[in-house]
Length: 301
Ligand code: HEM
Ligand SMILES: CC(C)=CCC/C(C)=C/CC/C(C)=C/COP(=O)(O)OP(=O)(O)O
Image (cartoon, rainbow, N blue to C red; front, side, top):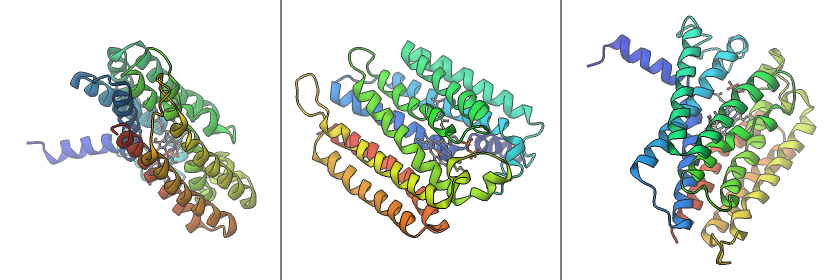
């Protein structure tokens, strides 16, 4: 039986990994693997499932922990982040989180390379892009930080895909990873518009925190439209036999859910408000999950 102290220690190290975020990241890896396995009729062994899910949990948790460590100075100032484990000194000294994140990174790389070389390569890429390119290099310097830093978001889907197949075309894998990549700008810029004062306090040049509200809502509406247009691409993809890979189930889901996202972005465009930007942000994660659920269901038809 764990003592209260031990369970609270586990909870705080769980919290520093930002589980709400890696739940969805892991789900995209599961969705990509499940979809590819069905479409290519390649079974996935229980061991491979464990390695895919375990490596992406460890990798995403590592990246989130290490970026939390990296941002401990600004997180202590921003309203949204000041109660996190490191700025609130519930993990102290902060280096404990650094070592925890590095151990998770090692676990994620070992387990990804145990799947195959490509899964390991995409894991290494995801870690490097999120921790070094986004958090260390661009976040505090460039308003396009989430563009180059966004590729890491597609890494879990690619890991799930290459765990099923590393031969032949990767078009389906890249499209599923692309769904995540094109979703990121709307996802983050709707939030950073909502909390722009926080970001400006710590001089992090998130695009919709430094641009005028008029420009920001236009950019968000444009990236939402781009994402919805991209989301119908899977319906037009064909396999080696020339047959469509997906059916109307995916198409109609993408259209209906996309229409809701476009309507929310038009609401923000026409009547900019904190409520509109927050609503669009809160709908963004369920929207991405719904697209992957539709891919999974459609792949069984
Ligand atoms: C460079 C890329 C990204 C950036 C900068 C970013 C940033 C953020 C930020 C600042 C939050 C709010 C966190 C908080 O206040 O606790 C957030 C929430 C979240 N992010 Fe992202 N994110 C990115 C990519 C992703 C990706 C790729 C996924 C998953 C596929 C994801 C999933 C989530 C989820 C599920 C939440 C919680 C949403 C909610 O509370 O409703 N994010 N993200
Ligand atoms: C396979 C692999 C390792 C993939 C990693 C992908 C990954 C962890 C993506 C998450 C990106 C993300 C939520 C960044 C948070 O930005 P932020 O740190 O600016 O958010 P904050 O302001 O809330 O701290």
